[in-house]
Image 1: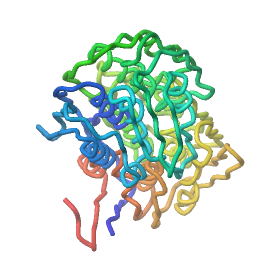
Image 2: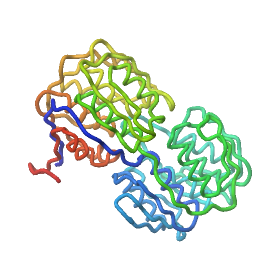
Image 3: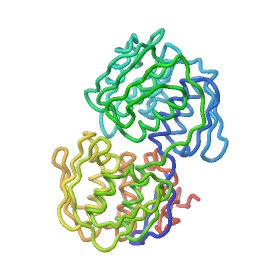
Image 4: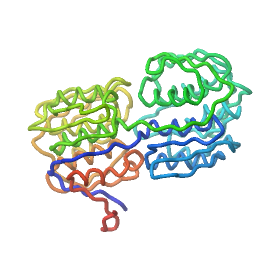
Length: 424
């Protein structure tokens, strides 16, 4: 079994280049179903989730090829299959993003229910409610969602709970619907905006991107385009926090600082020196002991839930007491037990984690329970005295492209091993 070994206590120094965003790449891959022709996609991260999504597209009749390490050509001219099978959907919840585009273009979709997830239920009710309001006939049968509509019609749809994938799915569906669709209490995340900007370039008519009310005027057809995936703000935040954990100084390049406003403010309050060097570069440095701060996860533009586990590591070695409140996912404190194995002093009360800073963490074997938990354990290992062994790398590889290699290049003593041999 593969695992990561980290010898902690080594400061970081150098430059890290951020990869394209997983959470932007997946809906953009789904959007290629909306139009025939050849899409050229750039800055596509090499991640397990992307590989699974490409397998799903191929299952639907889409042809694709890798034209460089981070570029793809995708042609959905031959799209004919409307069924997304359970064997692929069960591997990744984001597969539900094919539902809206399939109904919009083919008039029919059969998509396996994605089931549960380690960090929370994340139901798809909002997706289904929206499609019904747009005139789709829906059935839940034999573990599949079956949707039919000769052509979807525009509708006004209010999200009871802000949903990123719900907003994305219905925004794609509405792009080929007849008439006007208004999405109220829509998600405002940069990845949603990026998808909307892609749809605009494809020929859709959309207003209100980046606000909680998005208006889409449906088009009869869309066209294939060239597109570049935005940088991954969560990966950028993770590397900023790696400096908080290990000490040292890094330049984070190929990032969008404005996507990280809430994160940068909190890191400054915690004692990190942050400099916006350019429109796509951030400098970060840690001098001395970190200070405890309180964190509350919120939808964008608030502090992202996907960085909650990572900042908990910093609070574990900060001076004082911190309260971290998780408002997005009900089960997103599973990393706490593993951080305790490394010596962290954390007490969970409902959706609050009370973190009392300790002088240092100590290396130990730990197990990653989900994607962002795996990143938090790497940060903890960078900080800890001694050696930390991290198992459960299947989670890590879903969302971080060669994070071990990137950290090693800037001074971390980290390596990936299989059967006692280093994987290069």
